[in-house]
Length: 357
Image (tube, rainbow, N blue to C red; front, side):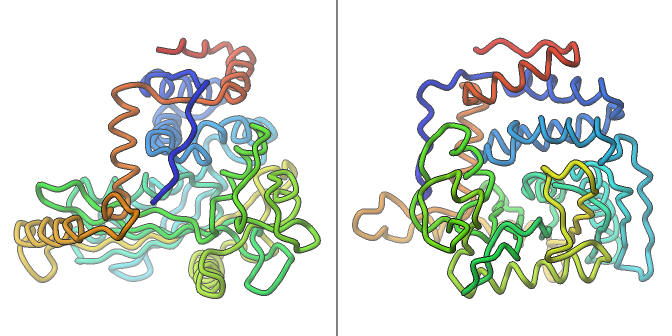
């Protein structure tokens, strides 16, 4: 079961206020209003789901890349459809959330008429939580899968050099009376953003998450950032990450492997690649029947007797769904050091950071 975060000492903020702050800040540096809203919804969804490694902590580096001209605030996004059920998106080096949203919209549009839609993406950037794109499709009754490659921050199984990205794999499936299944996970034991967060707070990380530059296991977050994170499941996670890089990077025409640049590199574009697969839930049976069957299997899983020492059996993504409900009601907890960074960003752009609840 996912370990609960220690939220003591963190001020809480209304998600609506944080969303407005992010959007207004991006608009100040030339991001069109609708695109700024997409990025703000993307980052705040990460916060709501309790995945702060992909949330507000990313705004300052997005800001730096935009102001340095390494990311285009107003990209020219090109879409080509070589086959009826396929599209290829050139993101024009735009913000990942902007490019990714355009791509999942295209994949959903194709699936509506063709039954399935596959979209490959190149010339994009860090696209935040994959759940953001799944939600778009699931809300319309579609099944969706999203993958992306990422800069080499993870050692391949048996290696000590950074080679693989923490390449995410995510699936969303609608249901009926039950909440949809939204599974979104990195192929590392833990997302590198979580190690960044731990380093920001001066806290250690659990053993098994990473190795230092010499290839030795470490619990020191800063040593881990200098070294490499580790794949989940040893050779299995390593293989899945490698395959994602091939499909999202090699196949799409994006950068891949050691050619991918980090967010912190303010001299070269990232050229990340993504891939989105969307299919109608009513391909083989009416939508209503599919949703009823989804409710049944979700309840089957939930009613499975828990093992000794386990409170309950969880549906994939259930903790994130519950966390989002709690944070919507009580406010999103934000670490003080991140608040300080955002306040400084607000002063720089003339946008007032919201007061805590």
